[in-house]
Length: 110
Image (cartoon, rainbow, N blue to C red; front, side, top):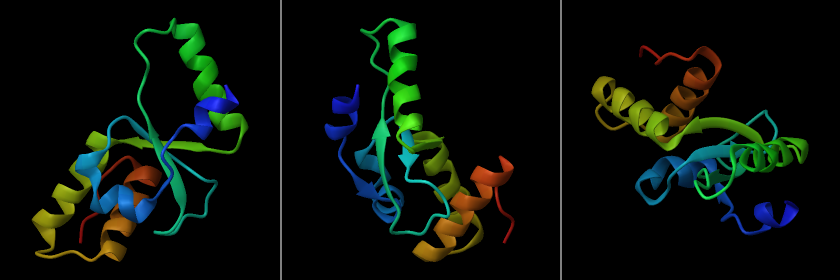
């Protein structure tokens, strides 16, 4: 199972936000506190695995310190919501909106 993590494409949170169209699945990040440079990866469920085996993989990610955060679709919605309120949001504003959503399960009001 540790090999599963080795095969994951590591990216920064900044890349996840700025290039969200290139990813799918759930974003796992290194332990908080997070910055735009925090390392992470996206993981998509393997539909060919039994649910119990799939859960083992996700549990192993967590055991190694990776934190499951939000889905690609959530990040797209966070970006869209922020852009609806701020014409050209900075990466820092998008990062703040990401953190707010993660902590509150709600969109930030600017």
